[in-house]
Image 1 (cartoon, rainbow, N blue to C red):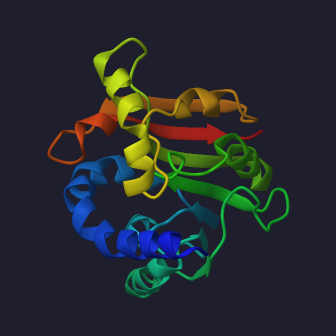
Image 2: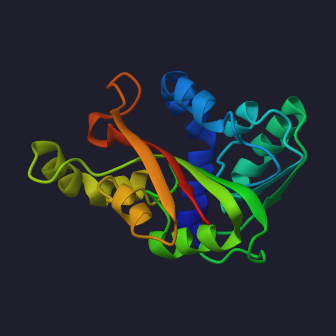
Length: 212
């Protein structure tokens, strides 16, 4: 790992909690509703400091793929405090070390904006899910084409990638999920308020994608 990348990950792990506190309060009702169905074997990609564990009601098996090693200590604390049994791997989601049909649920929140190859990640998610399994997601996405916000997202993208650990503010994540290997996709669109997140990444989607 390069020196810059190492420093970038340290800073992200240190500042993530304080920076996201208001957003966490805003998004909590969406997570409570979406994660109520979770059970069985659960894989979470990019869990960050492990904040989603509080919504998972002691699932029997949780695995987190978190490439930022400096997040792992916070995840272990969350596992201990929530009573979940878990495993943390310092690994990216583009190449998952699991067999087909291995998980009941895969979770992603504010992750697909920063992965290097989002379509490959979506293919891997569909591959490791059991028939009838669900991919649950909450992601910020591109604003509508032709809007001032969409233009601003493109203009600020280079800075976001540097400051946001690879975050891209204008990804068509909803359309990519619809075009992937899932048999059913449902999500709602909404905006995060400026008090929770910068306006440039306010457009969101939340929902599920199912494999048959």
